[in-house]
Length: 218
Image 1 (tube, one colour):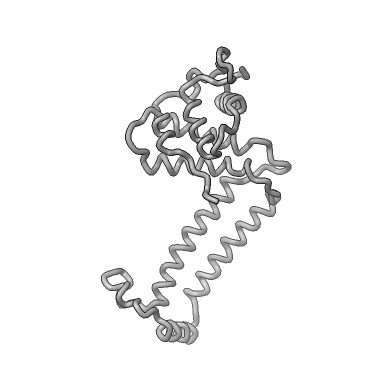
Image 2 (image 1 turned 90 degrees about the vertical axis):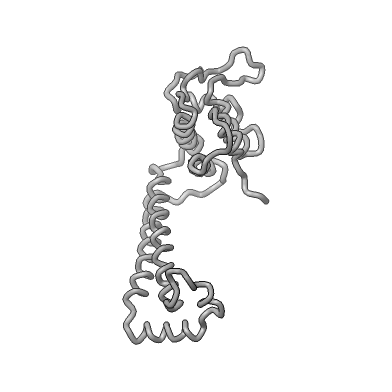
């Protein structure tokens, strides 16, 4: 089953842009959708206090692993290096020729890469802990949709150079209950292309957007 994907090009054009969407635009759309995904899954949510403890333990274990490898006693380090030399990849010298790892043993190369990986892992663990932090109690319905729309508002206003609030209202003359405003086509493209159907329905999408933007219920 293929992973759902936003029609980035159509979203870009709905921000009154021409050509191809830039990488920052795509990354910001993906970040917005990451909030919304949680509304689509039937998940049992880990209590707030417990989830923070899990993130702390993961960061601690990652740091402990790195510290343990960097502080190996000399005799144990030599033993590990000996095994690396004995099991060195057949094409290691060829692959590292002309790189920062040329003439460096494979163990030191792996240790250096591990530092980079653990550093990146800890940043993402910390960000996930804070970004997805939940209030105590039951998760609010549609909170992911609301958080996504907050992010999409910022994206739209950055790229379209106009307010997401402008003209956002229920179209009384529409038989389908549509909503007007420059922001709505952008929202529909993002959510409907991601879901592969017209969901959330236009009424729910329009009213949620109006709520987020501080507009009175229409």
